[in-house]
Length: 418
Image 1 (tube, one colour):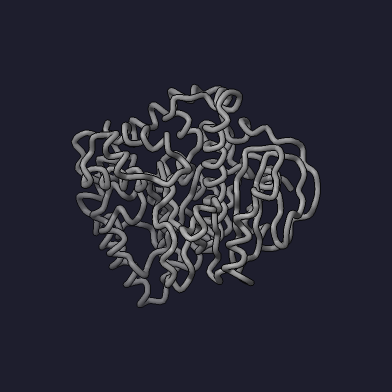
Image 2 (cartoon, rainbow, N blue to C red):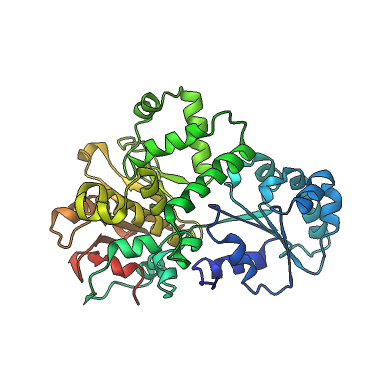
């Protein structure tokens, strides 16, 4: 299988060189192992996977000996590390020992299919010693081999008026997915996702928590799939799935910890003194093709026959592209804007860098737009003042044009086109 460059590469390699330990997490099968094995990071690599039962057994039964036998002159990469939590405190001891000897850089890269915050033994033991990065399935620019990070592009320069060819929306969303599916068009996607879900529910979820009925997580995901891109009403979903509050929160957390879904909080002012903002979260699926699988809908059929649902699918796709771009740049926050005092005049996405500089994004599944499509951004622009860098309306038309001060209508091609 050929290797496609990832937009995370530069940030990842730089982080490895400056920290003793990097934890690269992300959805199962999103390309973590392939990424770390294809980068030159100044050292010969020592790759170990805990999918190998012999290596896993050594790590679990003799964690101190396992760490001691890692070659000191190589960068050790340990895949699926969440399967051996016994190692974590020994990593801490090894890093602290190297720190005293002033040799505490580029020691270990750990990869895992579980969010670090679902592994308290790891996160607690290695606090202050570990950098955490997240890899997502392929972005549109990775599949198109342009390597564009559109958020970085927006921060660096103003969009230039031009025309694009009309995007084939279904094709690009279908291609922006897990490497196995993106690189092999002949694979049966329903069968692949069926196997994928089985692996997560029967293996990954059980590794994180004592779950008696993992099939109920599948039921919960189906319920979420009907609400992708919307503000989640937890009470309604509990009633629909028959779960009590404790079980629901536990299962939802597992869906997030295994990178099947993510939630975006509502935006608030930096001083957090203004309470007139909706505090609910919006939910999205990490992979839009997984979303369609759970809905048991064919994307082409949705596009042709169900504009309303396709609007949610398109917004989910943009949400994942935003996450792929921002996680490759460092500490960015992503939220949605929905202030009560403006009667729900929301903006789909608000992206802030560490300086508070903000990009607002509105998503429209339409080939044409009008003033109402960007009017809500003007409210956010007024609130933020000079911190408001840009607003863009991503749509399915062909012309990139400026529509207001610091606001542009941008064809979706801008996400990947040079």
